[in-house]
Image 1 (tube, rainbow, N blue to C red):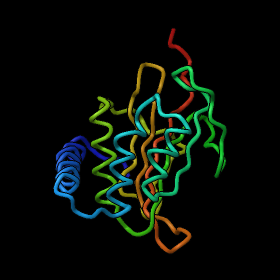
Image 2: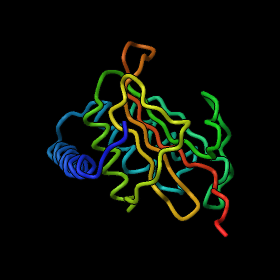
Image 3: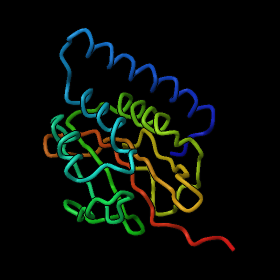
Image 4: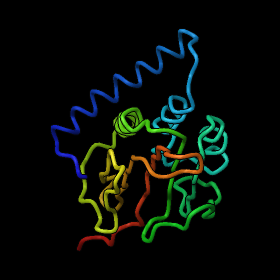
Length: 180
């Protein structure tokens, strides 16, 4: 489902609150679930254009989440990361995805929106036709990264290896042709 401007603002407020709640739990020494750690790591790292496969393993997989990452055209001088796991989505050159057991879509959607806000990725873009909401979709939208780049964010649930799982991904589309 595509979200309207009002719904996005509500999610932004909820996302900021969720991150503050997770941060407060960390400071107080409370225990953390994989969902809390993974969603925080996704928000903190998946929107960074400088995330590499090695850093994804270190910062995302260390939370206990299942990770699917590739970057065929890094923005930094890092080596391209090959597609491992499921096939690359047609028209994309980067995916950062995590999945973990259970239905944690409210937390995941809030964290994804907070991550976008932290990186200043706030300009909506048309959702490409190849992306569709699935039965478990909690958040699906596109954002303009720059005049030639779009990112698509999808959060939801799906069948996983241990029952229902929550997934979060951001895919960067290949550059659009320059407008003349």
